Image (cartoon, rainbow, N blue to C red; front, side, top):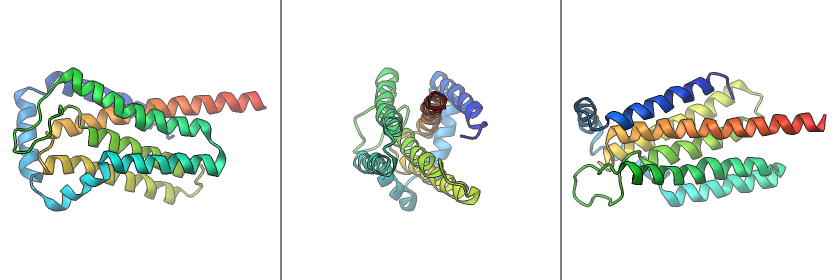
Length: 203
């Protein structure tokens, strides 16, 4: 990974901590209200929530695991996927139950807690994990950039879709992106460290 990815993960972790401490503040409430007015009820944006649905993520994650298995027997990479996406989802549920923030008050609202957004967090995790492995051995910088830009765009749209559908506050979504990215980098650091250790052992 690019070296600036690492300090950015510390920034996003601190950002998540700040949102956790102040999500019920007046300033955050005003921010949430503005974002709801800006994106609320946008059907085009709302469509992107399908890319963050649990069944879709499970399907794509299994495809990625199969790809890593058949392509290079990359068992550590398969564990990367499970840690990033699988445990990332568990972490999201744990945080929601711990923080217990209620969702926006709309009709037919979901019954689970709101902070951080699972679609935003796990959506970013599976998309960034895919991008990571698609670019791991990609020599073309232009293709690497394109893959990451597409992943970032879809991850952003998944999060905004939750605001458009009034399923989450904007601060929930922002928190999901932040903690999701921080967790992704932690897993990537472990993966790259283990690969370096293995490389030294085989020299």
